[in-house]
Image (cartoon, rainbow, N blue to C red; front, top):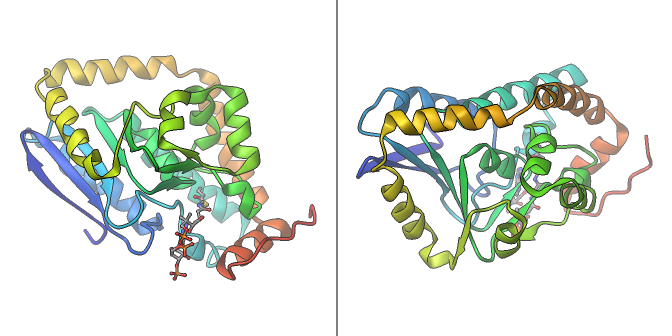
Length: 257
Ligand SMILES: C/C=C/C(=O)SCCNC(=O)CCNC(=O)[C@H](O)C(C)(C)COP(=O)(O)OP(=O)(O)OC[C@H]1O[C@@H](n2cnc3c(N)ncnc32)[C@H](O)[C@@H]1OP(=O)(O)O
């Protein structure tokens, strides 16, 4: 694999995302998340997975530069649907997955983290869904997972303002489990993962399966609608303006078209 690597210790696979400069989620990287699951699913030496990012960030989201290669709304809807499918597999995975988040988990980066079973964050990390800043909406189930974690009013605030919250706020809001100083984050996450890895793999698999029943029919319908809407919004002039503005490092000027 090109962007993911891992080591196993005490039944914990420590998986590193390494795609400089921002660990942006290209389609290739998302496919590797699927390959990672194929690789560890039947490996008895792995009982818990910790996902963390190399460099300054956990992940700054979908690769905005790659977006410019996609032309039609249907292609964007398909991109969203395939990302949703892989992230859904993560959430239903038979082994616990813990995201260890430093720097930033934004957009698709936060959607990836929200698909993990737990999130451990650095106190100063930035967590947010800033897609509206680009004239877009989230497309990897963020519109459905965020309100389930933080409630509707806070999810609306995060989406509509595009402002990230800190790791400390994320714990208060229910988006993250625990926060630590950045320098001890990974060690503390590994400590927690090692503790969890002592539990019965059979019982952990069953517990994760049972948690999925807390999802409703509306959730499944919601992600389908999200993928559809992701494609429609993407072909708007505002989306082209938002993406160009990010690449050109300027403020977007949205016209409502
Ligand atoms: C379905 C899913 C949809 C989505 O996920 S849409 C994407 C949502 N994510 C975002 O909108 C986040 C965009 N990025 C940022 O806001 C900022 O960046 C950061 C806060 C993460 C960091 O800011 P700073 O410390 O000032 O660094 P920097 O110069 O902006 O970024 C460093 C390099 O990383 C590239 N980069 C950052 N995020 C992305 C991205 N999401 N896709 C592609 N490239 C990205 C930049 O362009 C730049 O690169 P260079 O050094 O070559 O200028």
